[in-house]
Length: 378
Ligand SMILES: Cc1ncc(COP(=O)(O)O)c(C=O)c1O
Image (cartoon, rainbow, N blue to C red):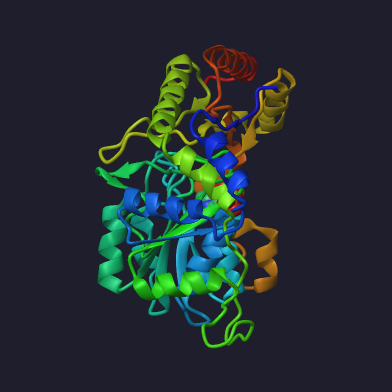
């Protein structure tokens, strides 16, 4: 099976890990945690970086650190992972969903302003699959309505918007280092901010809200969300090669675009916009609506030929778990998010993917899709 993702370890990972073992420093107090945080805060040009256990927890801490009031509204894309929604619901906030732009696969920034009410307090920007969200519009709205920006940069580490790094726009920014991301720590995440108060709050939340007055006495509840020295050692070594990884991701993306250029019945990722070059975190494919009845068959047949796939996200506004919160009209329709979820999937594009595997994947996908294309004028 060619897996959808496989990380690549070509740098100092073993050396730094050995150092952790040899020195006995394996907990969050080891030196690599600070070194990894410093490396990322300077890369993103953000004053503070707080490493945590994963990208989902990074979002939990990010939302809590902004100290919203119950009932405040957060605007976010429907087409994203549940990790974006969970902290909103857990903090008794109201999610307000935006549909996607069908060409960039990102939140449609032109639909945001009409959703803003006096209760809106933040926009959660989630850069999806490889192109950045159109940040100019987000910045304009955040200034006009005094909204915070929460920037989830898990999927586009190293990507830029108009030559400025994604991740450097948020009041708080979150990263994930799960092995399918551009750099990995096994499990891991980070929160970035320029605001000292937010930083202090994040540090406190990450470390069980211990206080200086008396250890083990607590005025607030926090989490143990500390990253270990072992994770940070791997993260630092991975980060040293981030530009190689980004280049490779782009090469894989362009290679697939070339191989699929004559394939009918599919929508492929947009290679570039006037503000960014796609970084192809994953290589997504959206089937033509005519192929909808065969979505499962197509995926199954690709898998049977030894090629791993993943379906696209399931839209948040249709998540069964939302029902019990009774927060909005259950008949809400966000057609592009629904279409992407119904017809989209992605194929192997991990950093360890070899040239012959790219060819093999494309041959299988072309064969299977064409088999169903025969029935239609697509
Ligand atoms: C956009 C986005 N945010 C957050 C996460 C969660 O990160 P983690 O898996 O590290 O919890 C992911 C995971 O893939 C993601 O794609």
